[in-house]
Image (cartoon, rainbow, N blue to C red; front, top):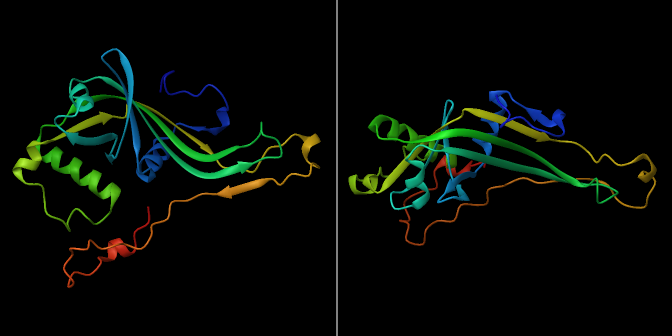
Length: 211
């Protein structure tokens, strides 16, 4: 770890253990990829997948941000999971409970067919576990239109806040409610495509999907 990944404030909330970072990466649905493009900062939201200490993202070969990433540049990725709203007696002490990860690494384009396959599998399974083996694979034309970028996890930190309000002692008797409003992402009932054949049932991995 170097100064890029080290937290400056509230040190007690930071965790530099890779297993904590991996857990947040694997749980977060979306990551944000930050880079400098044409001299300006750019942040792109995208889906991702992880294999070991490598993150994979993908997109169209025509996408400008992926064209820049294939050159091998320094990037910063962030993921955040909001777990609750912390309602304090004062506005100053109100906050959120969350798990976040900040990752610094270097991008590279993935050309090796086996690594491309592993990367696409990781991205697919990250979004919907079980789908990789239950859908049509990409055709040759579709594969040629897809660029895959690998980003090594060179430096990383996690930040986790999970607590009740920390109000000032003199505020404890004020006539304001205080506590935590839990927040979670819940999958709804799967909605079939109107053109889906009637004899195709909802797969078990979709019925039991937990984001």
